[in-house]
Amino acid sequence: MIRERLALVCLIIFVWVSMILGLLVINLYIVPLELPGVNPFVTGVLKVILSLFLSVLWLWVWRRMVVMIFWRSIKEQQSYI
Amino acid sequence: MRKAKSGKMLQEVTIFLINFVATFLATPFVSRKLRELGFVGVDVHKKEKPTIPEMGGIAMLIGLIVSVSVAMILLREGTLLLTSFLFTVLVAGIVGLADDVFVLNARVKPVLLLFAGLPILIMRTYMPHPILPFVGAARLTIVYPLIIPVAISVCANAVNMMDPFNGVMAGSNIIATTALLISALLLNRGEGIILSLILLGSLIPFFYFNRYPSKIFSGDIGSLTVGAAYGAIAILGRLEVVAVVAFIPQIMNAFYGLSTLGRLYERREVSRPISILDDGRLTANSDPSAPITLARLILAKGPLSEKDAIKVFYALSFISSVFAIITALFTMVSI
Image 1 (cartoon, each protein chain N blue to C red):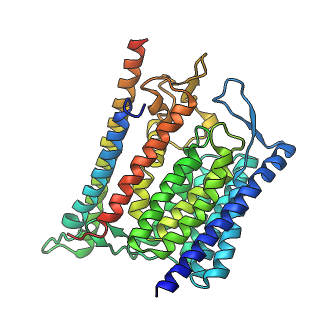
Image 2: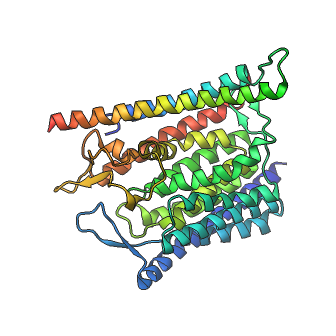
Image 3: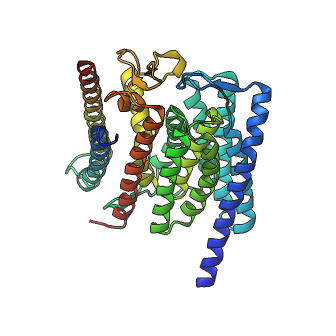
């Protein structure tokens, strides 16, 4: 049963791995970011925008994958019937 | 030292058992009363459409109140933390009760649930330094308090949205909370251990009555209470990232539904994501206007009996929980 639904397990793995990698990227590269000559407040806002962009990108990819998996499965099921 | 440790363990087990017995005894009594008062719902995924008492979550709430009170007396420490947990759960329970009796608007409910996070904020029982895998403690002094009410509301709603089949809400939350308990034991988080045991003490006996074929439904009072309690454990037990990973199936379900419809919705407002075949098996509805819930995604591959669909839910929760425990181990490592 679960073997037939491996795509869902792969989706969980994708969400888990990308979440941990995303947290790492934000903490290792975005949080320590310092722009010489730029106001620290502006740098802070830039960091938030960059992190938000990464999060939205993650959600967008995730959503695309779900929609693709769902409609492909429905089509397969209908062609089988 | 060892004697003190075993004494504390005995207290924790006692609190768990008291909750277990209180919920186990309360559930059949609450079930009878609810049927007498006419608070029943139809089990829509059964061909014969039986009526089942709803709002059984009252029994879980009773168990939680009893066990937190006993914990305050027995432990004599962390009273403020336990009080904030109790009030968070109570506020969510009251919102759930109001939703069961009056049917709240889909947009009003999450807003009301923001108040459930206030006890933790007001009593300042949180630590604004979530521990991230490979990174260690992050300093979120300003942002963290703002996130607390949102986190509690999101958790409560996510659990509320993932209650499609008999026993799925209770069963998948037992698995996720067990992952929190194991992680708290690995990371030596005393608050996480006691709060996870308290929630499990309510969930396990309720699951006995709620599992397939259900003798009682939790209602919104049950699912919102459990969701708020889970969120509170994540915050008070400092298990934020671990809790998110164990909660992936619930997050997936809520996110898919919301992203396909583009708004918050009540189940009765939208086209049903699942339909029943003549042989009693469940199948995914191919109507493009129906939300892509996790149940619909599971059934998209082919029809399943309700019992088999429930097993897939448990399997996904189990897989996420294993990853959550691995994540807990990752938080011990710093790059």
